[in-house]
Length: 106
Image (tube, rainbow, N blue to C red; front, side):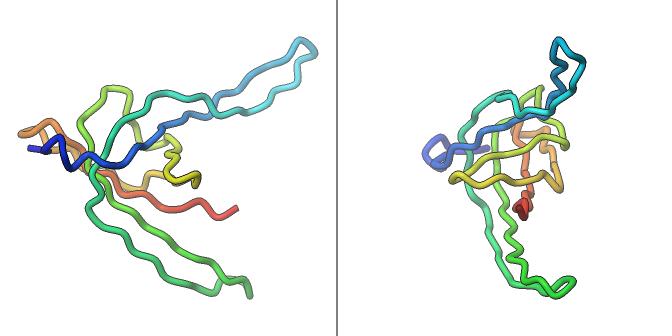
């Protein structure tokens, strides 16, 4: 069971959608799907070297209430940063989902 007082963080879930113009050009844009409140379970960060570039690897784990629109190919916005969903762990007993997010390196 998730206590309402622990849901302190706001997560925006976005979906990539292809939009075709009148000329036939296809562009991908991010469409806001839904916004929800979340409880932060864990966050880790470390630096790694890949192809002579330094990357900051940031992983966050949140717990939210289940939503039927939630799938693993969505983009999550938190603190003006974008994250990919790497793991969804559904808990059917208390209707919650534990989400593991990986920061998108731009």
